Image 1 (cartoon, rainbow, N blue to C red):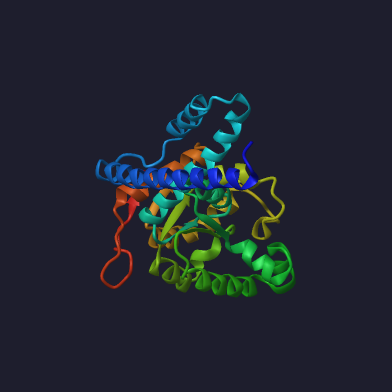
Image 2: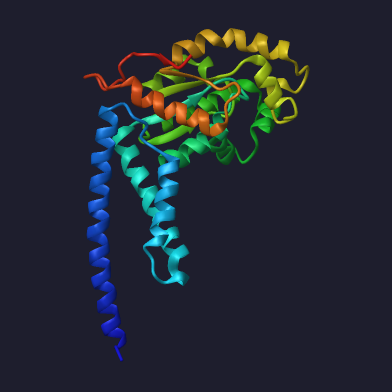
Length: 277
């Protein structure tokens, strides 16, 4: 019968073999990524990942361990996504848009899709102030909130390979915010019609600017004044009407890949707007 030390030696040997196989797999992933990028193909395929997870279980002979191996392999695939996103998007991706355009839900989904950290500017402010955004508006007013927002954005602008989203829609009101975000990242405008926005937020009482007189007309009037600011800020424009969160997220990844946004010699992103209209 094997001693505990003998078993540990076997585990160490398995770990060495596993590390070598995982290293080889990640190297092949990078080759696949480069090939897909050259051919302008989608980088991520949920169908392919689901097939791989199902298939990996067929390689396991012990029926009691099939699900465990599948569980571990899901984490392997997550690591593959992360290594690809670090190579493809070595900058932050910031989602902007009017309230109700889907920044938070898309930000969460995009974070999962790219295996990138997500940072919600509003949550960051709430953690700092120990109160909700609606309470900050009520107690201190919009001007104080905008100052807190600008400070948070200036701090976050130095982050790389993260998803940044501002739950509210007023980040574009301050030109300095956009300068900071575009200096080291890509700004994605999630665009929605007033009717679509109203349908999404009409039952949401947490919107401080729309608590009184919620209507399509009010949203349209507020949005009209911000449209030129969004247009000026956006590196990418993504229509969100009638799309699922997953569809919008896939659109963003696809447009980022197709747009070939590259850094200039000054370190800024080349000025280019890409729309999937």
